[in-house]
Image (cartoon, rainbow, N blue to C red; front, side, top):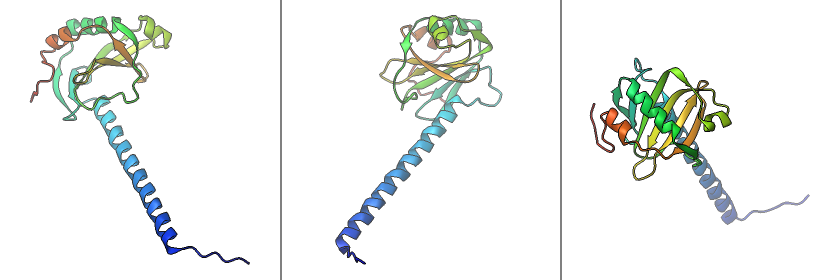
Length: 174
């Protein structure tokens, strides 16, 4: 039988290593939970506003404006979706700043854009126009099964913002 003696110095190094690994794991899990909560806040339906358009402030993590849906806004949203240029390929779909505009479609829109057809999207339940500060906006589209699809687009958002009576990057208290 062989007996191994371990120097106390190595035990301290191994213990410190495990503490560091456990700390990193804890921070990772905690941040994952925060990111998950942020997604829930953005995609959640506010009570009584299922058919309303909502503007969500990413930094404040709350809806800052609610607007009744109308045909002009829906038509502008269709124009924006018509200008899709490709798939958005960033890892994190939610920005760290800016605004997200949720536009629900009731009834759901029939998907006739080539990008939607290519990805098997038959109908669109909600459109999210994501507008990070100092970066190009992009779209998150939820199909009838609430599956998200992310797209880049070339259209302008100024007309939509005007119809919503919302000035980008203003701090509103409504």
